[in-house]
Length: 236
Image (cartoon, one colour):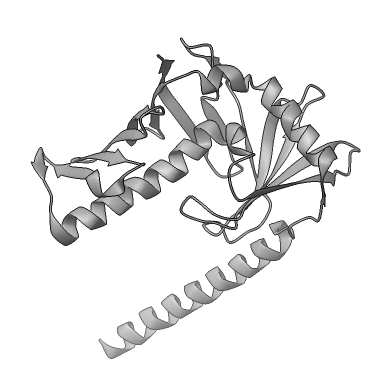
């Protein structure tokens, strides 16, 4: 019995060792350092071009957004009032972004209180910060605390590097937008705390024009997964 146990421990040790080596190899092969860019008027002009391409005016004039992210988190966002309904598993949170103390969360229809409420409300906020970013990030490039810089790509094109100095769940994250000739976003590379490898690329695909006229993406392709946005609605 002891021999079998020792053999299993040995196999487990070898497996863990191989996993560590593979992780190190993957990191050094795929990790990209955060590029340096040039900030200033030209960077802001490129950002403005991007906002025109995605029709920022129609987005601003859209009051309600509804969507389901990756098939698991469902949202109804009243942008004008700063209210968000978040539904996942057996929970439903009613977030008040302007006055968080008024936020509430329910499990199976029963209102939570105390530590249980705080825990699930924080989870709902984190879900919303992440999942809404995958929907409306192009419209957040001039958010308070952001910096913008132009990065020269190897193919001669100009990329827009946006860094978030504050706000959201992970301040300090950076995104390098790849734009077409008209300034429309095609993809971005990410340097974010949640992903240990820098420069992971995600496409911005399958753009829809919703009822309000706003243009929003319905899918993103990463090298290792696809993120879908379904039940997408935008209206007033």
